[in-house]
Length: 131
Image (cartoon, rainbow, N blue to C red; front, side):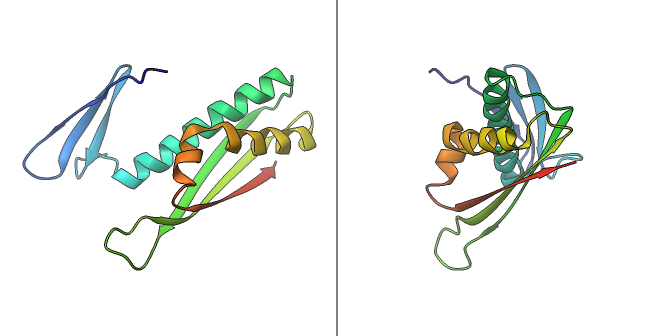
């Protein structure tokens, strides 16, 4: 699968913007800017949710809405301090089948390419909650 490209523009400091095929994101110390790990966590949340949703739709499982929360911590030692642990929390409101939602979420972690990439350097814990 071919990937789209993005372009980033920066001033001499850490203020910039990312231009993607369908939009822009403010970066760094720009007012309203997003930091690198926030972008990584956002990419994980977005990829995981898209994968989870695709599986739920194929299984004809319905829900009102969902929230994905991602947090993590870096390793304390090492020249390059990569991620050590990531918490991925999916909260689903009014699901038609809670057991199937849990299964869809577990499958979502297996088939999300960004989850797979991050899991090569960090332990990722999935939590599924219902409202």
